[in-house]
Image (cartoon, rainbow, N blue to C red; front, side, top):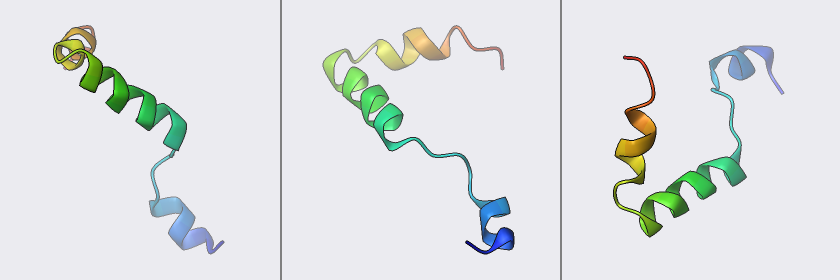
Length: 40
């Protein structure tokens, strides 16, 4: 992989992203519960 391209790509974990999205689908308030624990 080109080092220039790899420097511009954010870290990716497809399984983790799918788990988060699935959790949000199961519980609509999940996003707010998680995001409220993070400092702005």
